[in-house]
Image (cartoon, rainbow, N blue to C red; front, side, top):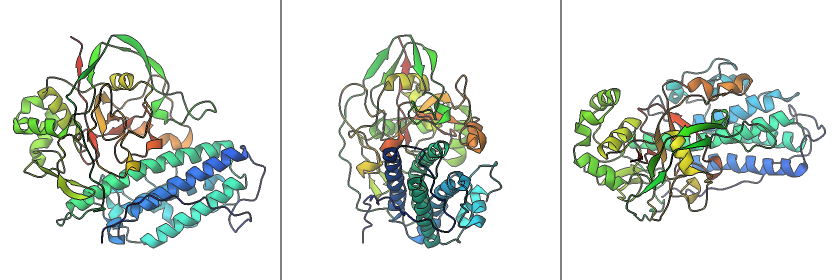
Length: 449
């Protein structure tokens, strides 16, 4: 029977009485309406994670198909550990429900303590999935009581907000990781075989031109009462001299990338960065990760489907994206160019995020700059490095972004697996240039002529 992939939202859990290990009531630290909004958002984000995992069996949820991916059960547990460790763990009178699980579900926070090796997360058959789900419910109930009892100081409300965005990152990873795991299965089963087929449309590739200018990119530092949420790696907002350039109004399509393959793009070392060519030869890359050898089908979260020629190409490494750009007589945009082109773009109902329920990119015809947010992450030519004046968050949470500023490249925009409320034009995603299992594609740029 086909799995039903409806995303559900649960009501916030509230309880007026104090329970063992829960905080005592104190005076509220934020207006009641703000607490209510945060409680509702917490319930919705946590419910979405559970709904995304619902089509998976316990066996599916334990699979780790490569060291860079994590089991779905681990994602569900790690996000729960985050709230218990960084929010509830600093509230007087609270104790962790399963303190021995901290070692299993810490990711990389050295300031908290040691952790289980990332490549071995798929060996964690215990605790069982049912135990992890029960833990999620118990932690959620505790946190809701802490919110409604006014037990969270303003700084902890900020950490809670961070935790929600952190969980939304893991929602996308849960989908991309299970996609890779199911693709590795010789049966290639679908995550959900009743997903709708995207309706795509096409437009000829056109260019948007920009003159040389001093531009501002980035976001104001957060937390600040007047600033919207942004990760520390997005700040500070700063001025950059942007040379004249042109950028494509839409991402590169599957049909365009297939032309690159058919023209021998994977057999021309002159198009490739040196380490990319060495990896292409070592791994025998011949096409994007989930395409079949005939170049007419691709594996998706709905199983094997005909390749949509108009949809943005995805599951590309930076090396493949860069080689295509050279073949096309263009290049990848810098993140400054990308953000300048995006301007003040915000996610809209027209954009293809996880809420659309498609879980794969689609083509969209039109004029002007489009599909900047959603559908596919877009590789840029920029290394993931700190902005001038960058300051990581204080304490252990400062490990969240800053310590990865080595050997990574920036992607912009979001994907069909990203939550809509998680994205903005200043968002800086980052992966090593060899990563192929994300919904990552490209948009062309070129120098002004």
